[in-house]
Image 1 (cartoon, rainbow, N blue to C red):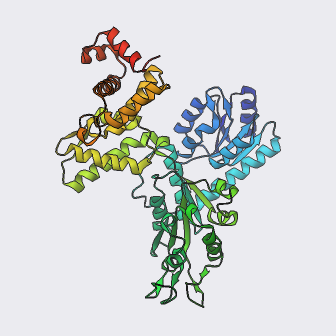
Image 2: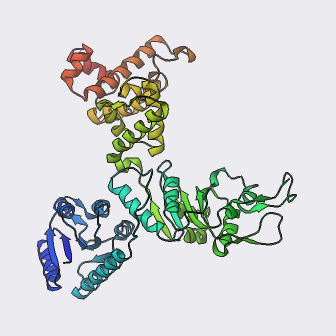
Length: 479
């Protein structure tokens, strides 16, 4: 039986919708808060969810990733009395079926519901019979699950795909997985790093050249576009492609024909295009730095990859996987992950995303050597200092704002990170400044390790309460 969930804090509107659903011979459940709605969605399988935007405990759009990450995600129809263009854009990007504004006629609601159910039925009927090979993708957070669902759809088609996301989020990995699960898996997966292409050689690299076509062309060379014939061409960082080449490549994308440098005859290449970027291509179009017609061509499907900050629940799973992998590669015994190690990883903001995480973990495993347990001390001091400073700000509400404090803060970064390492490789500061730096660094780490517990701080440091607070005031760590 078709099962519908209505999440709306307007009790009268909720009852009206439930009555309409019942008259259509469908089962209806109701929830008046996001929390109750998510709880019901997690325990039951729904075909369609009618979702209000403004609810007592938050914005309905915020739970879209969680709904889309369910094992059998429902079709979501936004039904709100306070709509706005930005909200509609976010909703559609989040994968909703439709965005309706109250008051909406019974006819329009019924029409939208029936269309959504028909789409759902056909989607299930045409679902891929084979399981996707998702080697390398690790995590269960709503954001990564939503990306994986779109990856599955992309794998079943031959459409152009645009992967977007910050540096280090795994765009090349997702591109290779789309290729491996597609009908072109037996062909080549050709990677082109547009950021490394020089404007003088980009045509030769992409299209190839004939011997003698320019100085240094001593042999015929096949271009990467021809190499991708029958397979997939992955243009990484396509936002870095020069405008002059964008125009030429647009024609190649449309006609699948190109002319090598120095040739008179055109060649063909039947490739599938996947592009990736960490830049805002729409903004680049506005600034005249990227062709709008090329953008329309490359983003037939778009997959946004979440940053590691948006998938905090995956950090520990990723860490366990990588540490096990590193120990095997280095011939080390398996290592346990200490509680302080895990906590520090969770509290760091990871600007370099998964790539940075994996590099940091490799550094930690090397630092630990034969030690059985990884602890925070095995992590780079620069990372630990950033975490400690963020925690101090959170615990004390302090912010360094004056020049003296900024200077002290700079000293912490320059000398505190390696306060007892390679000290003679730097020009030494005056002894008083060095003592202050060491003292401030100690206080920051003390507060972080003790999680602000004043009794534990007194016990470890041997300071009196009055002396401790005097030091906090001295170093502008408390207001």
